Length: 269
Image (cartoon, rainbow, N blue to C red; front, top):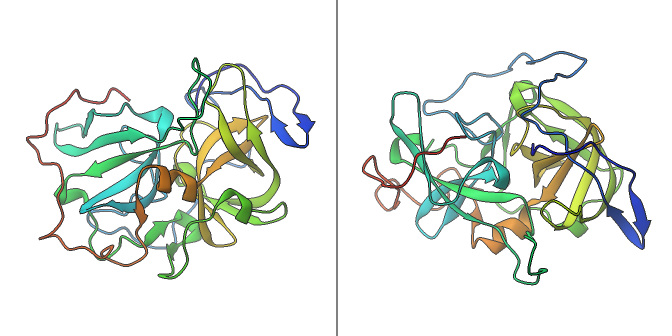
């Protein structure tokens, strides 16, 4: 998660207004209860990156479709729109799309409905037949129901069960607060949800499930606890459809994906 000062005390005005600093997920640190947890299932080829670490781009959230292009959601602060992402051998992984932004925002600030942008995947990086899965590591693969849409901020309640799998470390907890996030030196989010789950380096961008449903993107560390932004608002802002069928109602022949000849600066994340 994004670097910055340590969290300061939250202030309540009507709805909880989260005025908190940031402790970067780039900073050194670890969870007191260990690192990776034991997987319960194997990996596909190509792997399902929803819920898992994406080389060079933090963690993947969920697969989605923009018109006829398959994308993977990535946290906004881990990539630069318009740049390409390549692996250690120089092969294209994908091209980053636009950042979710709100027009109704102070002129000197950035406002976003969710901490999200897209990674349009190269053809050989798409796990066809598995696009409706989220790999929760020790929590197993989760299949998104075809009729279960992504959750909005108002769908998420204090006490709801939360699951994440950043850095191959499966954790669960519950929602403890929701409210507007308006730190003076950071992006303004209309909704930030806080859960009693510890987060550290590398968790950013990972999928958040609430009561088993696709709910959000791991976005901030708030006083040692998980802060995530809601999924539905971010998808709508970027005109994305969540993949809730194995091939996301598309096919390899119809998909329009970036190729190895894609131009643009390489990501330095």
